[in-house]
Image: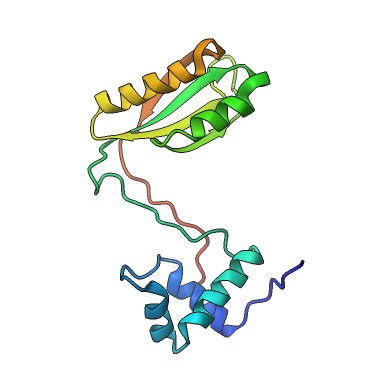
Length: 163
């Protein structure tokens, strides 16, 4: 099924109203509906259409890890055999403490790492414990690894509509 990628004036207003995040209330779609003069079912239907058409990629929570007490944020980087990276990445990505996991190309000779897994903790010792669990899971497939800790927050934003 193909979906139209055309957006009308209401879609544009909805995108602009949500591009900074959903309202932090118990019923965000109702709040948007009231703000835009729409029915909440129409807000949900339009957002679903925008998702289905690929105009927006996702609706999800983006927590500020520092604000909720996770001040040690480490990107663990791993040198694993390319022949097993898909299965290993799936296994690491399924760990409940890994927020995202992906494959990236090596940049030899300086950068041998091809598997990346983000781990958050209240301190570096907690992150180290979680990284040790990943290392145990990877076993002999892991040739080497490191952890790169965040030093500051970089705000991530997508495309923004303007007037």
